[in-house]
Amino acid sequence: MNHEKHQNHETTAFRNPLWRSAALALTAALGVTVLAACGGGSGSGGNSPSKSDAAHTGTDAPRVLWMGDSIAGAEAPALGAALKAGAVPFKSMAADGGGGVVGAVAEPTWDQLPKEIESFAPDVVAYQITTYDWGTPDEQRAAYEKLAKTVGDAGADLVLVTAPPFKTDTFYKPHAAEIKTAPKSAKAVADRHKDKVRFLDAAALWGTDGTAPKAHRSKDGIHSCQQGSAAFAQWLTKELGRLYSFRPAPAGQWATGSWTGSKVYGSLGCK
Image (cartoon, rainbow, N blue to C red; front, side):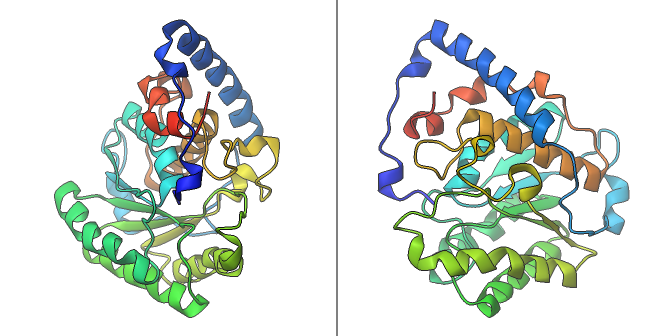
C-alpha cells in the first residue's frame, strides 16, 4: 500500500557518508539483536516440501519471484540482498499502490505476472498478502486459487506469506474485516494444495501487534525501515531455505550493503 500521505517524508540523511556509515553499523547491531530475539520457529503451517524440492540443493537454489504491495516493496531491497548473497536468483514485482490479486484493483498484477514468469522463469513465487486484498472470503480464496494455478501451470511453487502487523489508519479502517480474513483465506488454499502451495505466517517473527517495538515500522506505522526489512529478510530466507534445501547467507554478508540506501527508505523518513 502506498497512498500519498504515507509517502511524503523525504530525507537527505544517506547523502552524508559519515552519518551513513554510523547508521549502517547501528542498523547491523540492532538487526542482530532483533533477529536473535525474533527468529526461530517455522511458519509453514505444516506444509511439507514438494517433489521438486530435491532439485534445490547445494548451489542449485530456486529462483524466487517476490510479489506484494508497497510493504513488500520496502522489504524487497533487504530480501534481494539476502538471497543474492546466498546465490539465490531474485526478482521483485512488488508494486506501490497495488500488487494484489483480489478484485478489480488486481488487474495490473494479473497482466504483469505472466510476463514476469516468462522472462524470469521462477521456481518459487512468494506472494505477500497485500493490504489491497479486499473482498469476501470466497472472493479471496478464488483469487488465491487462481494465483496457485497460474504459478503451478508454469512449473513453480507458490508461497503465501502474511503481511507484518501494521497501523489500521483511516484509509484501511473500512476494509479492516477483509484484511483480517485474507490470511485465513490464503491458508485454506495452501491447505488444499500442500504439494505446491505453502503458507508462512510472519507472526512467527513479528507477533500480531503493529505498535510493538519489535515491529520496526516507519513513521507511517505501515512500512518497514531498514532494520525491520533486514529482520524480515533473514526470517523469510531461513524459511525458504528450509523448504527448498539451500543455506541462507549469514546476515554479516549482506545486512550493511548498499541496499540500505535505497530511495524507498528515504521516502518513508527512515534514518
